[in-house]
Image (cartoon, rainbow, N blue to C red; front, side, top):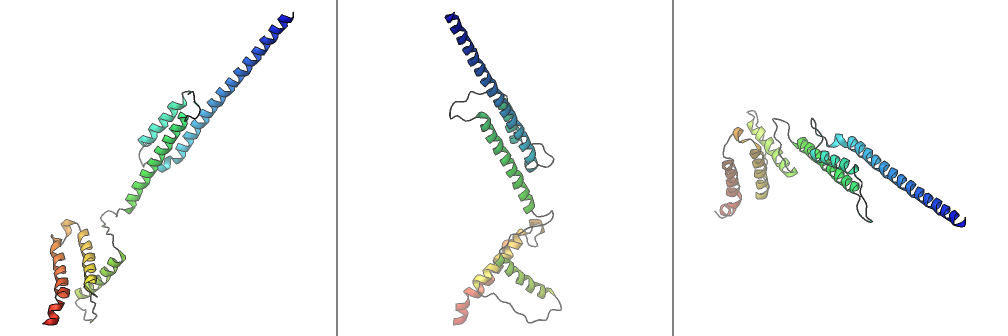
Length: 213
């Protein structure tokens, strides 16, 4: 009888251990399944939430993002035996997806920035420094006055020196260079540039000769 009771106890103990192991395994499997489903749902919602920031107008999801989402779905359907300290394959794919979404957002923003900086159709944009704007403002003012038939003023503006004259010549050259080639009043812009440089040289570099004459 004693031996039979021991067998029963061992049997019951074994069944209990098996039940505990089975319960733990089921719970772990249920937890892993729920975890993956939760990450899948979070991935879909995040991708949907930021889609307006990376999708181009009139186009589908960028190719890189579509591939990353497909890879996440493929990984979520598999089970991996994780070693201690190893990277979760699902996490790795999420990193790739995040990188793809970030790059797509950057590309869309970069393209929008270029369009915003580009001049309107039929317009020409010229980048000028503050000093160049100042040079051109009073050069344009003097030119306007000289073009008016009824201008009889005695207002006189002169360059303060050779460096000032060179800066003014450079500013004018930048404006001339921005004019499309077909619309330029003079085909060879170097002719006008050389003429201005000659005026500068003849005045400031010839000063010693005039002083000794």
